[in-house]
Image (cartoon, rainbow, N blue to C red; front, side, top):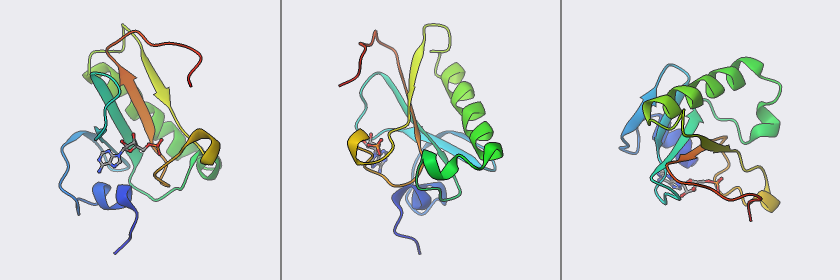
Amino acid sequence: MTDCLFCRIAAGEIPTDFVYEDDDVVAFRDINPQASVHILVVPRRHVPDLTAAAEDSDLIGRVVSAVAKVAADQGVDRSGYRSVVNTGPDAQQSVQHLHVHVIGGRQMDWPPG
Ligand code: AMP
């Protein structure tokens, strides 16, 4: 059994309501939401971060496609949404399995903190 939290969620070992899933990607609500819409889009296959995923353009394409579907399903594709991939310590990546935050439902500020 892996000790990677998002591998375990994607494999169904930790009961989680998926708002989207396909053969390669799952999406579920962030446990600490920063807006009314805050979904994490996660590849089923373990990839530690965006840098590691960069060589797999197929995987990146499937994740981005899922982000767009989730945004539409959540009703924020027209109003707008922020998609965030934190990579490494300076960005405060806390789970070492690639994930895209899809955040929407409110006006946001820029630049981020
Ligand atoms: P990051 O800091 O970019 O690595 O984002 C990790 C995100 O995972 C944070 O926003 C956490 O709130 C979220 N998170 C951690 N554990 C869980 C969980 N069990 N279910 C859903 N979201 C989680």
